[in-house]
Length: 231
Length: 192
Image 1: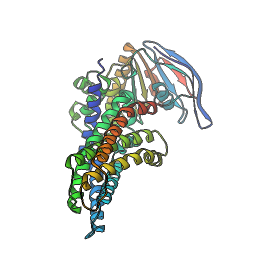
Image 2 (image 1 turned 90 degrees about the vertical axis):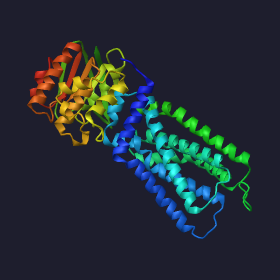
Image 3 (image 1 turned 60 degrees about the vertical axis):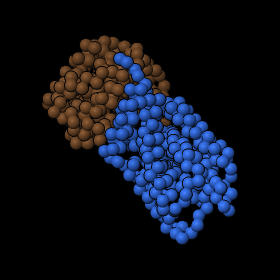
């Protein structure tokens, strides 16, 4: 017998990929939420000029909804479908969390990229600092994936899963959304007349905060998950 | 090899079982009998560590339980979108053991269906797949919950073969309602 972390994480990632590509439930749910949100915001703001602060806030609301709708399912579905026992018997909790988190990160970045492209296209908002926008979006999607996966993992062990997942998500996601809005706002509105979005240093600071948040969530998540997985 | 000492499980205010003690060595085959709701499945899940015990201790064979323990249970589900061979590859990768796909599929007679998604399998075929996954790592302790349920005569012969092979390798616990499955055992435990 040969225990190998990489082989275990890859196995979980591959399992998530295969089930998602064949059912397409998470990706479709996320994209559907994205399109509906973008359409609703664009329709509501037709012919209206939106500030960078409002655009970045709305973008994060859309990202949050599309991510929260699909990603926590990875753990909740295992419990509801009765497949969690198979993983408990054969897998180690750290490998299971990492495999699922990596797949959620991948799915979150794909959804976030499509969503923000659609959104900025519909609203016609130009990006003032593209690299800051890209870093904020990727780090924000990774943070969202890490936080939402952790919420789903913890809540999956409870009897009232849906309510608990939402209750845990609020304190975890609030600082993340604040950082994300700050970084995207600067990347969109820096040097734009009549808009006070803060300085480039403010935006970089918020982006670094997002990277740190993503790292902290993905690094500590396996240990928190391991504590609840077999209890 | 496998020792259970004063094991107890309480749901709400009711003890499902309490004060259970036994020890199994190589070649021991224990059948747990009892009416519906007597706690047979809960006892197997508790021994496997899937359900938290209220009191007592369970000592599993030495080594990583992913390798030394196999469980096949009626309530266990498989992934509807994954094929039979993908299931065996997944559990092998997670355990860190060889998948033995061809050998196992030949043993449980599912070779012809290796590329079928689990959602298209009959109850009996799923039971065979779960048996294959349970014995994949040649576990020292094998726990079977209602192993004959959903199986035809050929399937029940397969269970006989697997249990006799397990007795050569280690120990076996079978939880069942079916008095005919007493044939699998050389020890009996009746839950009230």
